[in-house]
Image (cartoon, rainbow, N blue to C red; front, top):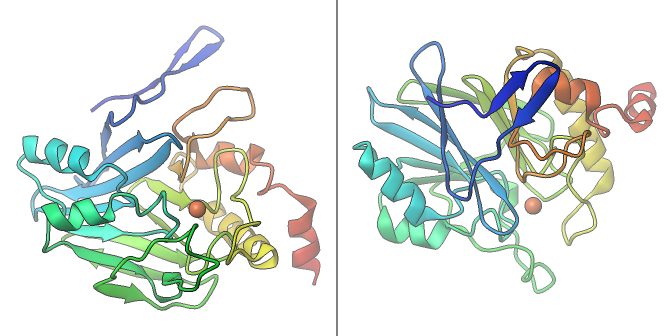
Length: 254
Ligand SMILES: [Fe+2]
């Protein structure tokens, strides 16, 4: 188990994960949460692991060789891929993972399968073996091998975008970063849907334990100029610019 934030006197230091370096923390019921960042865009990956059932569910694995070799050292193997959306950087590791672990289950939202020439540069095809089909701004449970997660359909940045939370973390994908929210100027983006997703996310986050970690889809700057791998839900609710935008008040008033 490792931790990367230290407080000394009045100064807080944040030690950032190196490329492909794993932070491993155990939740109360024995479920492990592995978090890493990988690639030039500092994509954040989260995995929930239950050693007693051999279940390994990974969100948006970027460098599949790295994931598979790190898990192999622990006698583990990926069993499920959970995709937040199908932008190229988030499904970067898909083909390699399928070649290394052909039996892995691949989950994504049914709206996340995007076709068309305009989308070609932005999205990449993933053959989901299983699909979520819940309506925008609803949360459904995903349970397997003792891992219980909430999957929230949160479109706007991309069609079929989902966030995934459970066992001490809320993996925000590209809906929310630590201090900001995902861009909405790409093919398939929908700015109004994004604001509605952020509004729903705020309600959801307010009902989660404040010490849980918000894992963003990418590691970007925090409000103090540092670049932490995650922030607490309490800090995100307090300081994330989009979660505190007046636009949310306007939406609530409508
Ligand atoms: Fe994205």
